[in-house]
Amino acid sequence: MGILEEIAYLHIHNIVKLRPLDINIETINVCPLQCIFCCNRIYKREYTIMENKLFENIVRQYFQLGGGGLGISSMQSDFFFGSYINRQNENY
Ligand code: SF4
Image (cartoon, rainbow, N blue to C red; front, side, top):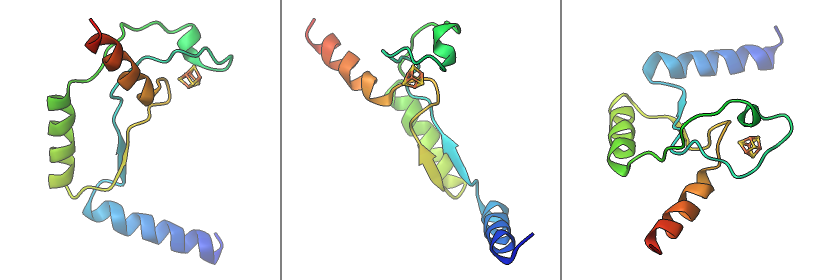
C-alpha cells in the first residue's frame, strides 16, 4: 500500500470510529428513463415516494449518530422526478 492509500485508509478508519461514513436515502423509486444497463427495465417495484415525516426522522437519527455524507440519489431512481410527480398531483 502506498503512502497516499495508507493516509486515505487511516482517514476513513478514523471517521467510521466516530460516526457513519455516509448514507443514501432512496426517497423515490421511480425513474422515467430506461437506460439499457439499468435493472429498472427488468426489476419491477411498486412506485413509492417517501413521506417527508419519514425522511425527517431518518435525517434526525442520522444527525444524532454523528451525521456524515448524505445522499438522496438512489442507483435506481431519479430524485428530481419526485418533484415532477408532486407538481402533477397538485394539479388535480
Ligand atoms: S435509474 Fe438511472 S440508470 Fe436507471 S433508468 Fe433511471 S437514469 Fe437510467
